[in-house]
Length: 386
Image 1: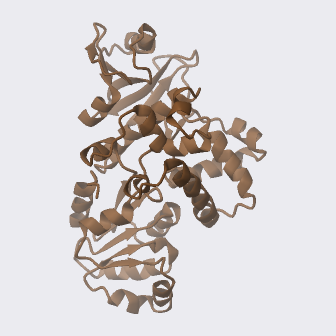
Image 2: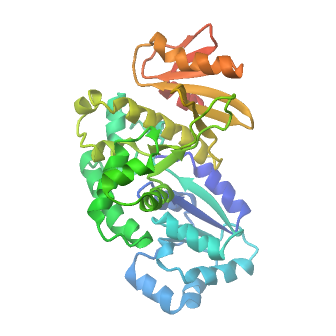
Image 3: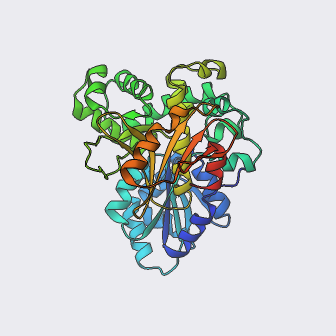
């Protein structure tokens, strides 16, 4: 079993809140995590039709079977149980009584917000991180292999080929989660939309262009974006607000949380195909930013990442903002340092007056440049912590 970095935060939340909800992408390892951390708690899956029928017909009697609490998995399948959980939590002083998980985060969060607000601590669990894979000695050697294989647990613990697993994952996600959240009549159009979005990972979100490409209106596109975001399929990287008296871009950039999904949607099946694919740089950037997000979410911290771009095209891939103290980062997939890599960092440094910056790239050589930029392999930087 791969030890998860989120163990510590999950244990801490259970000492502060009467209930804890673990949300995240489908198949990110939520059930395995809570069962390993709370080994003494009974595990109950409401996916089981017999158990769900009992809980639906007699919710109070069902919950009385667990006076010391329990892990309730797929709890969003039975919305009416949340009111009874509220009563139990309000009448108890125990912390970490019920641990709630579910594969449909939108419905889970909706039910918690309506009935259990203020009683539940949240932890978002994403797929494996590069550090978790390294400690488990499962980390692919090359960046292309890693991007292609991705970070979802079943690819590693069940040894399912990533291409086959991703295809089934996408189909399952569309068929189950999307239809539960929003009644989409034509799933083929929604699937075309996801494929168009995959081709735009690392780019500004242009709802109008996506609407034109799928044949639906902009409001529908925005609704679908919200579904993918709440399901932890995509992340919207917001622009940094500091404009330095320049006209800056205000649209977010879209990134997928896992590069194996992007590769599958783009028809990339081998590392050789990926190595020469025109989207390789964007996929590489997607992977690095997803790993930076995991560093924060595994500690239960808000994501403090942004990007900066002005209308002329000058752009900084990532701005890390720690309470106003900012750190610019450029991400390059190449293995050889090129002088052009520093142009945007130098431009931003002249505007802001901030000299310290990082260039994360695919090569192995570390450098500290005279302009204040530290050049470092992206894996080393992620494991060191941003």
